[in-house]
Length: 310
Image (cartoon, rainbow, N blue to C red; front, side, top):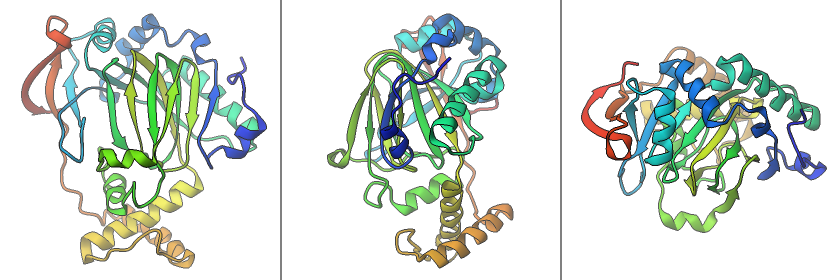
């Protein structure tokens, strides 16, 4: 099966350098129907499954995700919850863990490699299943990321990966905390955004670290894939060094102000500093604040917070 329907030479020129949208054929695999997804949820490891809802958050971090306990619900119930409530499900690494999905992931990135001439990527892929009311907060990814939308309609807002939209200090928090990728957001930042209405079987790719947020317009199913490149690994090592310098010595080293020789030195230092655990990362427990209950309005029952251990 040819993964792409309309990839052109222009897409190849812009890949990883600009925003591109391309039509694909993932829905034709049969792996993303409700029935197939329910079976997937039933067998997927619980430690790689996140079921969340949107909280009130704060002025700078609206729609902050809350963690839910889904262990009393089977896959069919979770699909029903996503259709009826305010639920966002991330089936992390589903495209890697299960052979039938891994075969498709290999096709996806094999096609990109064949078209662009770039080496085959060591990609990871998750599946997002989300409610019509789902809102993904303003955030950025520390690796190259592609969204392969499969079902439903959603609007994606992409912002420039510049200091105005992605402050260095915010990025330091992302690369030093596995559970943090949100960035401070205000509505006036939307003046610099580009909005894309994604329909079924449409892929969107953007520049490394470009901040983005997503508003669903219907029940949605998407695949999100990420992979490291020399560019992303280099930048993350430099930024890790800068994060350590900020924390330990109060030094405000900016990515944009550094010379290339300085960045090379910091990239080497960053790998060493990360390996020895030089950054003091305060404990950040993943606290459960609701349970999925098919008998409750919106399938959500609030609970007294407790630490996730599943």
